[in-house]
Length: 275
Image (cartoon, rainbow, N blue to C red; front, side):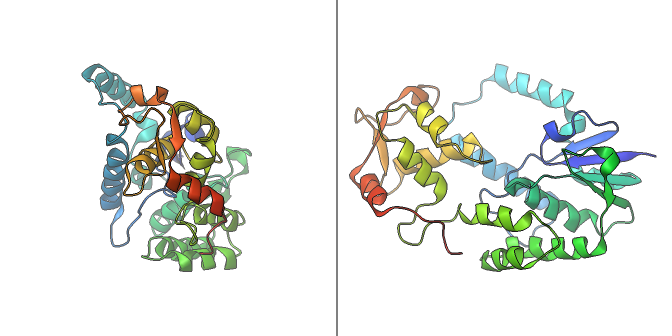
């Protein structure tokens, strides 16, 4: 029987037999608007990530562009559009307990759950043999949570994630997602707070990002956030020598420090947002 494996990242599914697909999108970061079909949302998110990197990252050279295209060609089975999985007799979903995995699971169940195919779930640390069939109540709960997550306000999603009992890891994932919203007292989210703490002590940009990393939030999110913190209407961080921040790779080696506004935010402390 032909089997398709769908996971958040290609490392999750690369060793599995059969057709493999991954949608490496950290849905916990950035806007995920409602009112779009699968193709429209994918295009929107691809554009979001492009814009998230264009200000601070180095321009892509033609040589690197060709190298990247070759790598994608080699991994085309892993990085293919996961909606193509509907062509197979069975689709196995491989999503762990993290924020990105749980949101990917909601998206996949919301789309694939309405199709006439055998849909299974497997835990990455237990293996293919331990997979089980997806239940109807899981599909219904996933559709509702996915709708709430994409709403203009995510308050309903957080309430629903805490109230539901279908997905054991969803409440913990939602708590992590809540931390990516600004603290109502100072307008700073956890990524910004981590960067402010790391920027104390005369570190370079690369050292600050390395020290600030936590959980499953990728370094791209930290680089992009640090750039905005240095170029916003009220900068919280600046180059220690007073110069303008260059793009990478020169930016990586620049030492940074907190501005007066950044120090004021630090004095106020930080707590996870209420909603």
